[in-house]
Image (cartoon, rainbow, N blue to C red):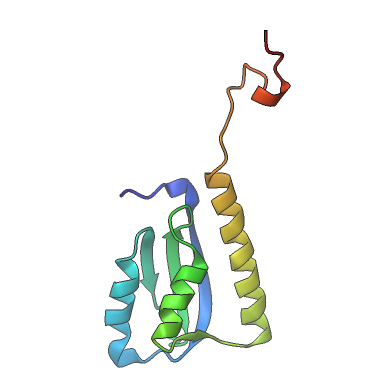
Length: 116
């Protein structure tokens, strides 16, 4: 299944429990999920992950639940909580936009048309 580039979003969040010896295997398992484009360590910091995925196919709570099963939990810092809340809101907006049915520009919407 192909991803739609219009709905690809990325988040950089900090996590507890990232064990470097098993991390490559776990990241590969996350990338195998439908809609996930890339999950990487963005720099030398070993507590952050950069996640890119198609929000019309998968959502952040799905990724977080899989990671929590492995013992990887989001850090409880003030800034990480703000970023996590923001990421969840963005996910919901992108999902809603991906499910929106457009109408033609030269016609009135269905509910506004007079049926004859």
